[in-house]
Image 1: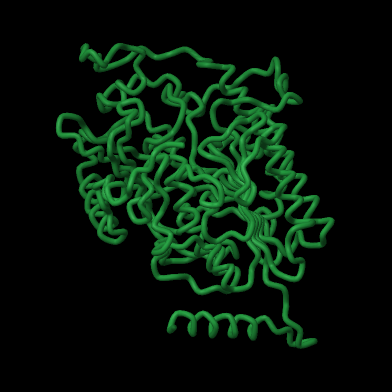
Image 2: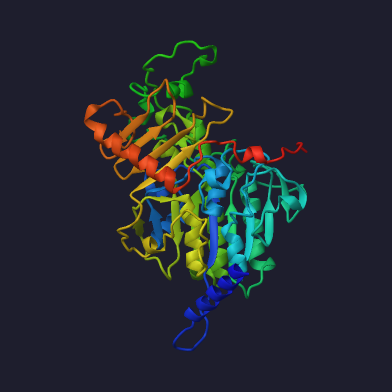
Length: 493
């Protein structure tokens, strides 16, 4: 009862604060469009210049007309945990989803998605796209916090996918990115109440493996030269680095306990040229999708009253350090793109350089909506950063975590990383292997492990103290199976 009273009071205060002094009318609450891509590298944007031939005009438009976050990271670099963190504003060890497990969801009763709080404040909400948590069927597939639901089980398929439309399962014809875009636009134009503010999640399957572009893009960028990664990270030999990293990348039968060399031969570029090109081709349809939705909002007269957020559920290796995929604590894995457009608050070409996390999204959205941020959310509102204000008390370090899964050592061991604006410490909790320490200013490619350099002993000690502080602050739980063990594993359908 007390919570309901506080909620009603906060909404009343919000509406009162929105009264215009000129005509005593209530100003419109902002709408929210949250576009989330799967596995997009932080520099796979036209504006980054990484790929001179890459065209992403609609993503570039968001950056030019809004804010570009240059140092934003995920708390865990894998699909399900990251998506649950976006929704709940909590770390994976808190909400309970720390694997791409087919039968586990977050503890929704304790950690409701931010959309549930928006619903209580009068918003209409919709989820269109990937959720990638428990593989539920029928109406059970609909997660809390959404008035409209269009999704699919697991990764889904690029072509002619099985989908779930508000509990009705069927096979949809076409290309997944286009299908999701059509459903989002239909909801905006025909299925929502135009008298209420809205929150729409458009969460793509793209650009996840298997990288299958739309037929119209199958020859896109053909003949273009794929540039080498910055800082020559493709020449990685893993000299002075942990053995588990060499196991992760070395094309060798390590499963039979054959010896792993202390240094691997550098590989020539390009590595898997076509794989990178297919990823960028898949991205073309995503950019087209963004353009279509922006045009729809403009036609509806809602473009400038909509907070448009564009991001990825994790980073992605594009051959750096000889890797693909994500998971581990290097920059290419844990760093994501993030663009926000909202001209009522954000000036064009705003650059946000502070370290932010995906758990900051939920409190930021609630703050912009004038909704009280619940105590369980561990992230921080980024509204002041969007305004261009400098916050002296903004976080100086971030914590990243990973939990070993069935793909170890391909994926990586349990680990925690502490990152400041200058240094990074990666602790993999391995008794018979080494940790990693990088000077990000002098070595942004993370090629030279300084963990055994006595000149950095003081820095290492400070980062280990920071790690302990952050673990206490965020109630870190190293037991990755604690939530899984409380769940009844259902039979697969």
